[in-house]
Image (cartoon, rainbow, N blue to C red; front, top):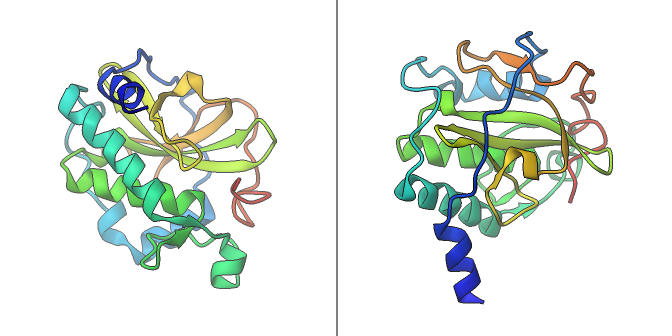
Length: 196
């Protein structure tokens, strides 16, 4: 109902910061190729806060971007879309897989003034054992997840994921480990392909 959506939309759930084990992680190969062709998205000066102040306005903007991208894009695996695996991009045709959703959300939120340092892509594994990429946002109320599999922006602990790595806010193109276990092979659309 409209009331329940409004209540969820207007109430910021409690979260906490996502821990890092502080060790560098390998850069996903698709991300390297993306950055080589989209330098304006990756070669951003490391200025601005690593966490944003999460007030009602920012919460609404984050949720709106998540909903808009999830509703406007349709899932299409890289092999079917481009004839090859592991193409990270911001699609112009409205079709993409998990990392394309995440990159599109990251770009839109950067355009709204949220620093790249606070908007970090993360590599995870779903409960079904499928490699997946989501966007996280680091805030003064904890870290939240924007996922193409969910209409809701949620605290990171509420997602049933195994967290492996995410972007390092202190090093351009850098990634840090979130888990001592090695992550899924970042080939063939993140291992077995983004979940549909």
